[in-house]
Length: 387
Image 1 (cartoon, rainbow, N blue to C red):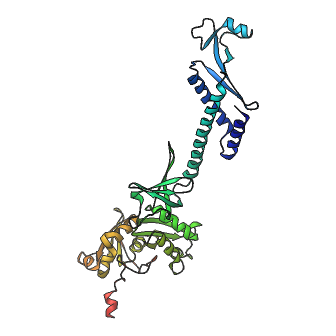
Image 2: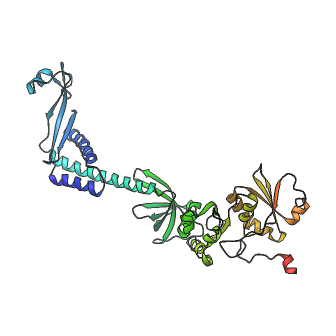
Image 3: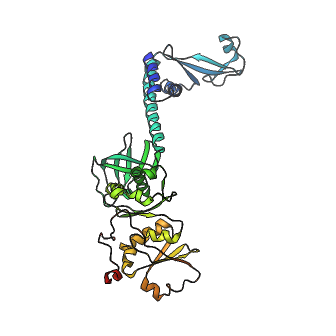
């Protein structure tokens, strides 16, 4: 082994963070294997690497026994005494057996071991870096596409964006810059395998943390998110300090903050609602942008019956039930929506039995202009029109 290889190993320790001891141990093991393979030896051997001289020597290790049964592994006491009079039964004798042309084999083996260890170390560093980024957001560049994945370059590694994690309203092209949410980091045989998503609710949460300083510093807390990626999302926010407008902080001046997120998600509508520990208020807020007249709470079933004006029934339910579905997922409460006419026929406006009920003040709409699921202006209250 030349001094150049020793210097190379020392340099690798500094540049790649690979311990010199680890490299030398791996090299010793590989040289032992190479010796046995190339010289057809079944001996028990040890490899000694002298860093200072740049030399490699191979020593056969034999046990001192009274009766030799295997000459490759054993030596008689008489033979051992001829080498050194201090040897006793049970001792191990080492005899140098370094082949003449072992230097060439050692150099080839060293190159293979160093290359392999460098590759493993780099994989380990990348895995360590990205395992800490799990459940985080990163910006990547679309590299290529196939029928299963979109391959996104995250700098030191290529991540996989499966079809199931791609937004239906989005077209991906090579060289596009996109923000992705890291869902899984695995240490596979060929290196770290990173799976990312554009549909995960966590992406929406991280985008708000990037755009809203009050969320990033903890002044405003995201309590819950429900999302149907590419179409509509609802996010519930709360501030412990009553002087802080949690919804207003997320919307931003003239809607600038939320609009940045909407643009990143290619027009996905976002309803920002105020969280409340009171299910009556929380459920009513969650059904924005529709108005809610009354909420009846069934505590045992964790269910609610929500009464809305007749003219806003379709708005409260939403297109294909989306608004009610997202509200239920956001709050964790089952929601049964009835119009005032239906509630009156069922006697819900007069007889509340033992259930908890409350009249809800007009709830707010935040995160977008007041519009229904189809982007049309909200329907007017007929009673106000008559006035």
